[in-house]
Length: 82
Image (cartoon, rainbow, N blue to C red; front, side, top):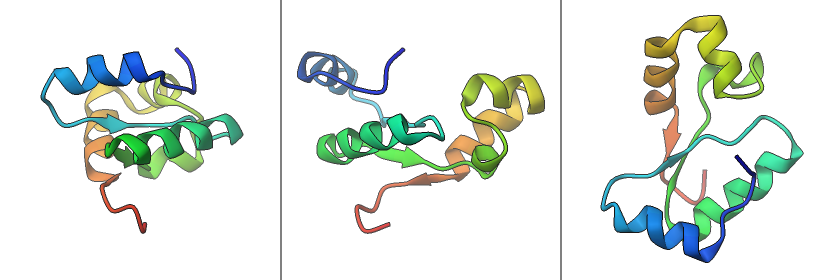
């Protein structure tokens, strides 16, 4: 819903005690979300469709739900260096 995450939202997400994978939009605003994800220690995914689709919704419409989800999991990065 946004390309930013408040401390309150991050606390709620972390309280779920699950792995968090952020998929930012392929635009300048998505870069801000990547920085926040790194701050919170979350993984960031750069799926292979990231160059052809600007967001998850477009990828689902073009490739389908299953392929989009698999690409997100396969494209996740947990290393701050990468």
